[in-house]
Image 1 (spheres, rainbow, N blue to C red):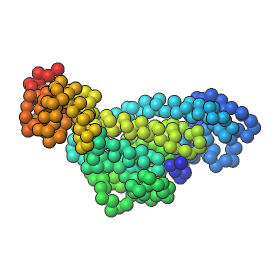
Image 2 (cartoon, rainbow, N blue to C red; image 1 turned 90 degrees about the vertical axis):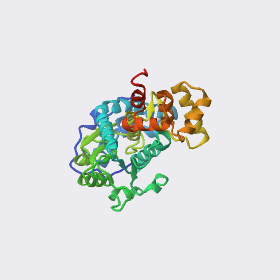
Image 3 (cartoon, helix red, strand yellow; image 1 turned 30 degrees about the vertical axis):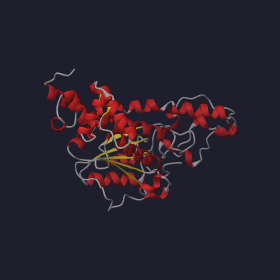
Image 4 (cartoon, rainbow, N blue to C red; image 1 turned 120 degrees about the vertical axis):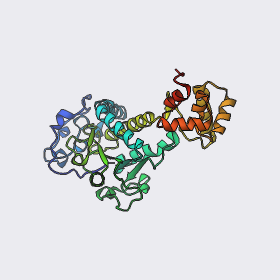
Length: 342
């Protein structure tokens, strides 16, 4: 489903033919495959994600294998788009790191597909890294209930002024919108900037109206979709890749891994506790019995148990070292061992 159809006037991107991904020519081409210049979908003021894709003009006449190949050809262009945005994404990670270290929060604001992807990204940080909405919170146009049932008109309204967790000075606010003009996101960024928060935008539009209210614009210009305006496709894939990369890099830089092992994940059920024990066995090179004992002594805190085991310290000393190291387990162990762990 399209994220939005409400691009604002005055945004004139380059010739759409220059932005079209390279793909094999459409099958069964005929005279009806040529765009109609009078078609509103060809209007140059539209963001790239709302324009027609020349590679899919014969879409409804392809057989199943051809159709899937065309979609796959287009999907294959997305990782390169995300790679091109890595310098800006790195800046965003550093901004998020400064925010969390200073006690602020990271906010996602999105509508439709982008909002649901952002909500999923934020929610998964709990079981994966032990981070909840007190640090990373997602705001979805229309409220959480729209995660299961779309309410397209919600994106035309600004966020509720009395929402329970509005951004404040010292927070980082990230707007997610394919067109770059969703009123919900534009309003959120404008209000966040007025509140003194750092603002950023993830969009697929080089001329995004919301960029006027963003300190940083991460451009994910995936171009026209296989089905015109269906931004759950390439644009959504790019948003998911970018959000996953952002949040994962933020968690790693925040000290929530030891090597490539999760050490701040919840151990609240049998599966997660078993994973925590395996993590301790692997990272500290101890027996399962020693890992269980250390985990129990640390009140189920995997990272505390790990620092205590590797650093040869009590859980209390491990917690103190972690606090002084701003949550970085490797730095905490180095403090406890005098740099003796390699």
